[in-house]
Length: 217
Image (tube, rainbow, N blue to C red; front, top):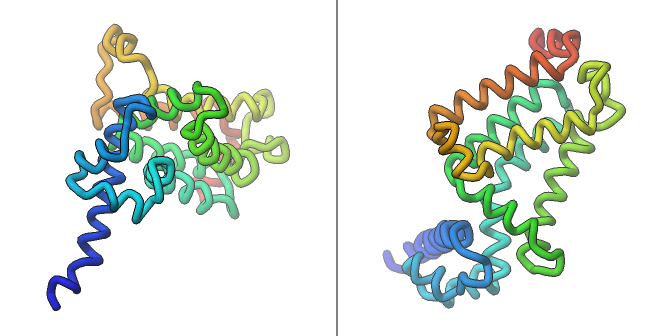
């Protein structure tokens, strides 16, 4: 009886192990070089579990991408009903927290998005990116109808690109550039970078009147 009761938990653990192993391997190796057998071996489970949970390699890859991006998407959806300048802070904080746990993950995303659109991994990743960009466009601040959130002399589209750059660049910077400038992406540095970026946004992009209203809420 005890073995039967334990099986669901064991299977759930196997699923999480497969996702963790897939994340490590896909982040460090080209997609085509990562086999289901290699993922299963690293996870310490039978490769049949990949078919059971994900169907195939593509399904596992999509589950892996989704597991990392879901907290960021959830943060965006949480603020879609009442967007404000503080929404940007919450999203950036969530993004930094998620990516600091998997610093190779953003580089993998960029590498995949530079591949031909016909590639399966590109299509899977692009689907998640479409959700992210859609949230930024329609649910938050980056639409022309919300121009009043930003300084009147700034263009909303360029503000969006600036925000995305702040989100991504610390994690996708070439290691040689980081080393040249004696930068190490430690948790302390990333926390400091987060506060720096938020300060730049508050003082350089946000309409002062709107910012004061948000602070008083």
